[in-house]
Amino acid sequence: MPVTPTASRSAAAPAPVPRMTVTGATLVLVAPAHDHDRARTRSRTGTRAPGPYRRLFDLPGTRAFTVGNLLARLPMGMFGISAVMMIAGQRGSYALAGAVAATGLGATAFVAPWTARLVDRHGQARIALPATLMAVLGSLALVVCVRTGAPAWTLFASYAATATTPNIGGMSRARWTHLLRDSPASHHTAMSFEQAADELCYMLGPVLAAFLCTAVFPEAGTLAGAALLLTGMVVFLSRRSTEPPVTAAPRQGSPLRTLAPLLLLFLAMGLVFGSMEVTSIAHLASHGLGAATGPVLALQAAGSCAAGLLYGTLRPRSLRACVCALAVMMALPWAAAGTGSTAALAVALLLAGMATAPTMVTAMARVHELTPEGRLNEGMTLAVTAILAGIAAGSATAGLTVDRLGTETAYVLPAVAGLIALLASATGRSIRRPGDRSRVVLTTDARDPQ
Image (cartoon, one colour):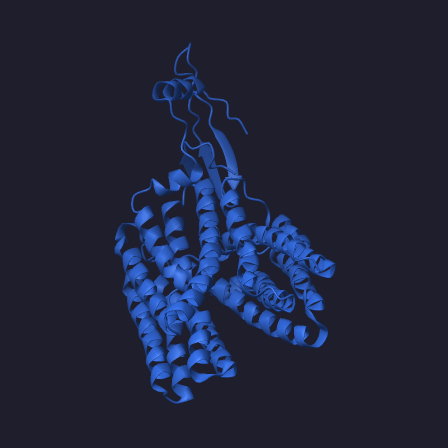
């Protein structure tokens, strides 16, 4: 609401009137610049104002830690398929390969929140590098055990050791949150970029892993993933100026307790991802697509990546609106599968993917709001753990449904998961973080108050 100034600086030039808006628990005061000054500056320079993503990466240190972040994040989409292809190729058993991969997923779900808690408590550099080294050693041990014909239990133990891999996406988001804590609009753009990066890496990772394991040698995917993880983490952690400081605030309250209703939403999102992937693989295989299966599946991730980048330039929407769109879009592959047209299914997967990124970005913003101070990385890792649990459950359920009822019926599962996500968003919409305090931020960026 406009505020009338109590006095003018001069009779001819009244003081500019600030604008006020409320963002969550933050009161933002925008100090307006004079329009004629802006016009004069633009005409003098002949340049337009930088876009939202350009402004992000103009911040010192952000480009370097983003390069490291992407290098370390790419293996997250490589390790699973690399382990399956390596073990199945050397031992001739997909059952063993799947069991080892499932064990690693379960170990990650258990260990990752503890690793994240240590990162919050002692800092990223002190914890993430030793944890990464342990995970890399686990990957190398897995390669040696597979190659030398070691007993099966050594495969399970080796792959379980990789569960110490830090949540690089969570640490990167924590850095953006620290750097942009007084700029809500730029923070929204950064979170959208991070979600797009997730989708890009999970789209390219399996393709790169499959190529290395088949065109080079079976262990190449795992070895390349370990090298990328270690290199990327070293580059990321070397940018100490952007690392969020360890807070001295009392560590009271568990993120698990405050995030519990929202974790149901992330679990439902995992159900969407897991059931959609398995069902789509089976459906496309039944239609004899063969090598074209990968590109068609990649459309879902490509749609999410593009939507995430676009969403970062727009005003954020409510979580309820995003999840409503998700629930509608998840019914499209089911309808397309009924037509028997592969082209229709490809379009449906693209549109379904476009609904996931805005939902994830908005839900992660809620995690930021609800997580107790000083435990942000732990809170985001709990969200990722819920997604992984949902993916495991969705994949298993979809596999059973495909075998017993066929692929067209199995496409009901993502649609149902979308409805579960909608119910979960309604359950968690009113949760607030205990002890939230309002704060006032003064900014001159007119995009910030949203």
